[in-house]
Length: 137
Image 1 (cartoon, rainbow, N blue to C red):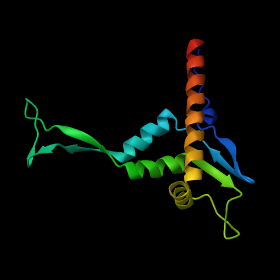
Image 2 (cartoon, rainbow, N blue to C red; image 1 turned 180 degrees about the vertical axis):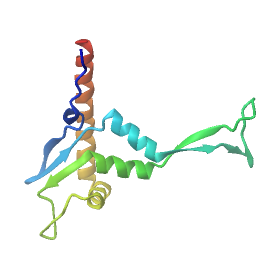
Image 3 (cartoon, rainbow, N blue to C red; image 1 turned 90 degrees about the vertical axis):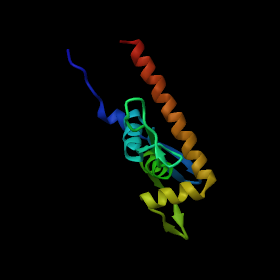
């Protein structure tokens, strides 16, 4: 017996109507993608208290994980927004590149809220499908 993996399904994306002919293609933040983003944005740093490094009973340095939230947001936006069409800036096409994704996400509350809600909905749908698949095992 073999286990078949559908790698296309793992990165499935969905196109949404945004406004007046503008469309946005998004993908859910999968566990694997989340793990990769956290790996890139999290570091461990020694805990310092009153100028001294905190150590455990055995003399080992106690560390805490620090996440760069700005970098996390940048990677999240770039990963989840796959493409778009119908976006213009001064009558010229506004291409779906990392810088423009971040610009819209950070400067348009309407766009940010739309993207976040759609990603949450897609992620929940994936979780429900996952639970259904587990029931069938």
